Length: 157
Image (cartoon, rainbow, N blue to C red; front, side, top):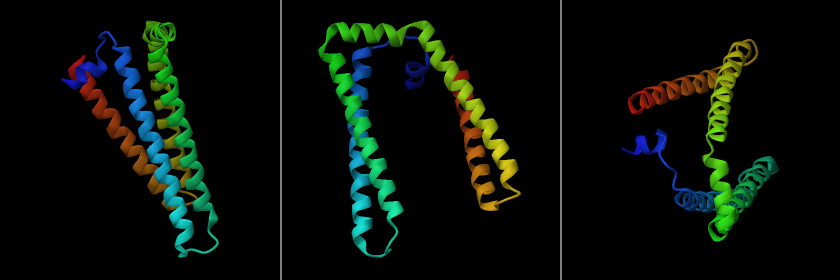
């Protein structure tokens, strides 16, 4: 039961979590490199002349992903090598108050985003129907995810 391991209050294997974060950081760096490569190929394809916005956008997004991934790898490797830093970070992350703050932050930001999407959906119908349709699709996807997670957590907890 993967869901029980994810959502139940079990002891956290912090070293395993750090190794997973290293893997995620490496994946983010590779995705960033792919974004930069795609931007480079797009700029050199010659199909769209003078459209540098897309090339710059994907280049900077890729650089951001590479930097964030490298920072995550560096930080988590430092935790695994330094026992004192690992112990301090484990206490910070596994503390009940910090976990509760994190969960409530996610919940409140999710509800606020749901409300903002709904308000944007209502207002955008007066200006641009394409934006309205996109916001309606995002709103429906978020509502579906909320329902799925509610059902999954209801079964596990």
